[in-house]
Image 1 (cartoon, rainbow, N blue to C red):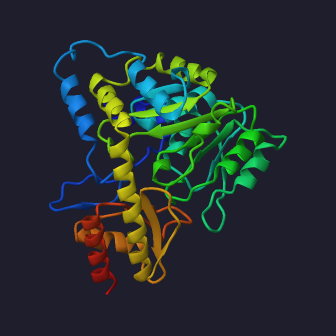
Image 2: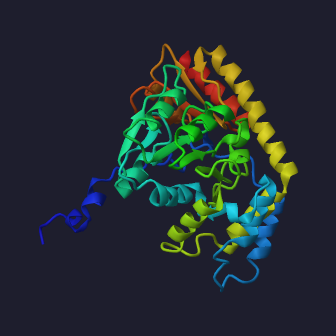
Image 3: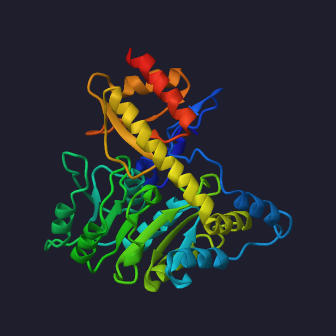
Length: 362
């Protein structure tokens, strides 16, 4: 009776260090710039599609193949539906990919500064990881990753975010090809959660490289974080492996409402272009204002900026902003513990941030 309840856990679960999501507090008049959500609402067509889908059919299971959504994604990106896999947010898609492709005898290669969920997936599935340091400018060291992939020791694959998180720095397509050619017998996964805000997508390379997987999400650029829709594109043999994992885990990952809203959002290209342009324009203006306040601002191709101030501790700045109902993200992690990640809000939200910083900085 007195034994710890964790004694019921499997050993691997007891050792897990789960991912810590961004804070979602209930604070009056909050300016929320900590979780990279889009500050604009979804397409009105998506809202209408969700409402119509809710009127009938919810008593039945959704299409387990998500055919309509896969066809919409394929049409949008010049692929065929056999090259598209969808899931309950890109995090689920990533989890299935780690399970399907990276449980090998050799280590998986990751940058040391990247989306921290990657290491959680690896630990969950017992995948050994080898971290390649980013360079002094916090850029992914493609040459070092490629050289390591080509070494006699081998690797289980390569995973990168492009643009990278949490830095926002993007890689050109030729550097992605360098990794693909250096690791021809293992999967190279490119996580493009933020690519619509100025990055260069690897989707045109899908037909050329049988080892490429490109992961995308509708959470950021399509303002559908609350709907949880992600997808991955690759050649059909890779999609087949992901489908085998899905159908051994959850055959119905996307509900009717999510599929309907996602299809409508993808098809409303005019609205998509207008909101992503608004985010990028605001990002450029905010970057200049932050620089005027003495911040170093890393070059961003995402819907956030990664900044530090030479004279002020990042954790203290984040705490002071929170006291003023402005949330930003601080990572207590080696090499980046003096940086803040600031999501791009509306112009009014960014103005409130700047006003708060002016007060805090004195």
